[in-house]
Image 1 (cartoon, rainbow, N blue to C red):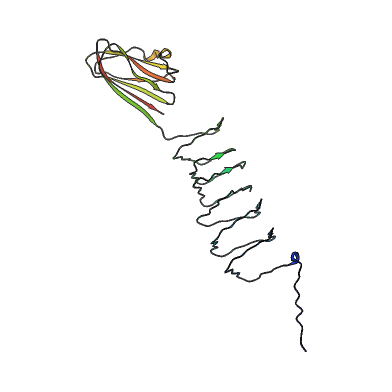
Image 2: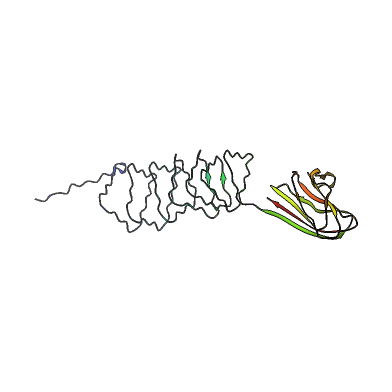
Length: 266
């Protein structure tokens, strides 16, 4: 007696199901999913030692939601578009490098970084608050803060500094004259003038400070006014009064020769 094969395929697409129970699934060619929506209700676990995608992966969903954990162990992950992460916590155990002209916008209420952060972007914009709890924060480049208000509730320690300096020598000058006219002292934390009488006559020196580059606004520092500089004397005049500009006024009388130095720490 001939037995009839009664295997019938359901022709309703919404009721079609595929169950793969193989220990290993190998796809040697291309896989194309053209569904308008692909829903995975369970878990997706990839346990291969290596997962290689030779082509491109494009996700065009308006929203991509990942409820569980995502661990990426590739040496390099390149994202050409935008990535928005709204998780309550984001933990990165390795390193994250952003190069080129990419931009990063972080809108989290709080961002905590426990390790090292190196940012090489031309511009970094932070719209919210930044709290750094590292014992040491080292910035080897420039930092420009254009906020209307910057509030620091803790301590800020800047280890580096810049020195502004210049010097001159005047030989056989007579009468009165100016040295280092228009020296900008507005950005220094401390500064001094040094005067060395290398001639054969005594002269006097005075410190003047001004709020603007205007000869009529220069005022004498009463603590450093008309100071005698004897022959072979070495004099230090500390700039103790704050202003925009400073200079030295000398009175050489019949003739004097001296050297002068200015040093300011930014």
